[in-house]
Image (cartoon, rainbow, N blue to C red; front, top):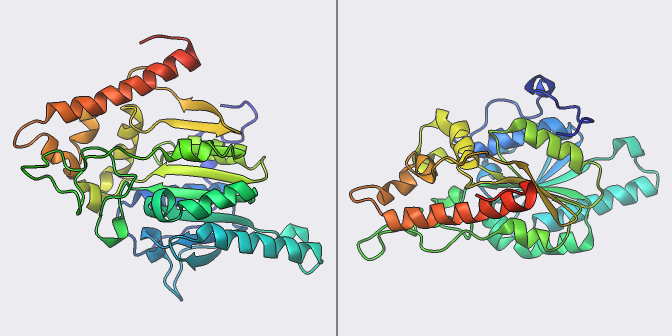
Length: 317
């Protein structure tokens, strides 16, 4: 933690909320938890550009839980919408139509379906153009709003509506999760980070750091989904914390492409502790344990962290 950070304890997050209670989103939604923290740190002078997805259900005209502005777009074009808003604000300020102190932060919010798949082209274009905006992806690892079909964010072994385990395909989803962090990092934006609602201070400090940079500021948040993942609604934060503590969801940041992990577990919990808690992985344990797939997942996690320990701590494990 930077000694200059204004977020030194959880008490420093007890400021005004800009997302009020009473949304039609699912109980226990990981995305709304992250958005609440994210918005609290950004403040109220924000215009959100939403790519179609789960969070779209949060704002239904004329009802909104937000104390800020909101624009809805199709899945593929939220960064293009953000470009239009940013350009309009800059032109109005340049012409003196609005004072500089009434400028707004422009933020995209999107699910993994748009971020990893349908909207990747417009995101790449926005980063290439150096658009000054925040991009928040709530990653629930499937197309949650339309029935929990697999996306390219779906991890190996997950059950989805379009990758059910069968006698010929007992492992469920057979492909590996796309590494969106590395795709974005290749563009070398000013700031890029992964975040988790289980670590609110980490979120706050990362947004605080990102605010210092002009240009694309990109955040990928793990967003546990009770109906899609199959767990009780009060367990959302525990699911997110287990993802971090088992090493399956690293917390890291990249400044102009240079990566640093903001939380390094001294000892990784076995990935089984995470998988067993969710109905989407139940077929890996019942009626017969699929040790091969579980070990494949565990092995990939250990390989990743072995390199992190060597590079950032100078340790071998």
